[in-house]
Length: 554
Image (cartoon, rainbow, N blue to C red; front, top):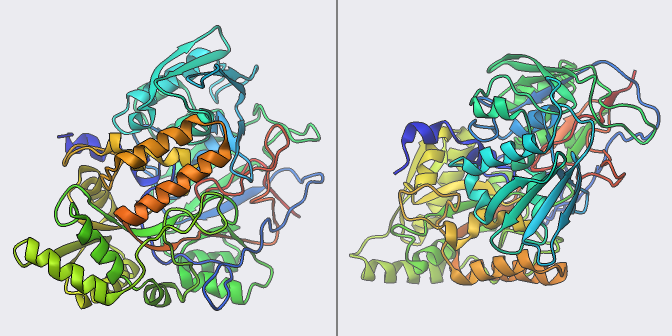
């Protein structure tokens, strides 16, 4: 068993692993607009965009909904808002375009051998860390080796055999099996480049990266301020050096209404919003505000994660019973006014990876029959503890599900606890069902850590396959998808993975979630940015924007 104190200190990739956001579900998310049938209307793609000459200087005040306990990518707990801050301080070796394809970012390029089992990262010349140290191959190798050795992030390196250098500007990664788009993983948290001496010191309070901003001050639980990195490596298409802003103040405001009120009062310039009431207020009476949704890439899914390795959900009929007992339409009407689409798998309609999954739709009679049979086979009882974060809305959500499942004959108990200890329970397998959000990786190859049967460890062994979902067929599909250069074939593999989930029911799907950023009228290019090769960048990467390109109109 993993030492609890060590696990508690290493939740970075549990709370929001940038391989695909993983977090306890806040079910008050909404979208800026929707049709009456609940389908999402994707609007306000870029907001205030301007590729002309920017105005330099000024301070952006950004209202965050959560605080992080440090910035070491291998040991600290990056809260759901953590990547927004991290993108200001750190660069990743790769980044995604607005079609979800990876491009070199801090790296100059990527090369591979014939069978995609060896990848070479070519580094840009002249890049320095915030402390002036040059970024060479040894810096990147040590960063990667540190993350590979972490009990948390190491799971993402399960198919990495070795990481070595080839001269001062090349890092070579050898894999145990082909992975045709391995660099996509370097567009995530494990692609962060930082001072390896700082990493290895396990100090999370004084981050040293290569990013457009440098940490200036931090009052934990209140605000964090960054200042312009005057030696930043990246320039815009006109040769003008990023970043444009002098400072960013990230202000922690855990209450959504307070964030919205502060934005309306002009105390902050941007607010992260996941709470339905203020989102709907801004949508219906927008005024001069930009209401921006995560409209590109894959969406988060909200679901009940089931522990497939422990009773009652080690029995697939118990999992199917819960799926049949869940009335998604009634749930979403009560939870979010049907502004969110019901989900039948990890991908939303419109995604290249989506196809109908055959996931059980609401059928109370079938649910009751399966529950009755389960009780016959298991001593007359079917009892479930549903674990949710200690939030008012989460408790209300749990009560909706409790009523629906009870109608099928399930004895449902609600357990409401703080998020950090809840996550520890999940990663050790000490739960039955838990309210959760996940699976928004732009490339689903990055979701393998959550679904790979090789990661379905026995309870209480630590694993990132939180559901302990163990289907060998899924493992083979994931392996083939990683190894084929034909992306249409890979998409069919992921569609087949989703269909197999429709049979296995490792999760009870609820909806496709949306995060929203609301900005004042003077904020320019909040979700509009270009990669170094001039491709259009993905507006939000795991719900977090890039900020080097943002400027303020005056």
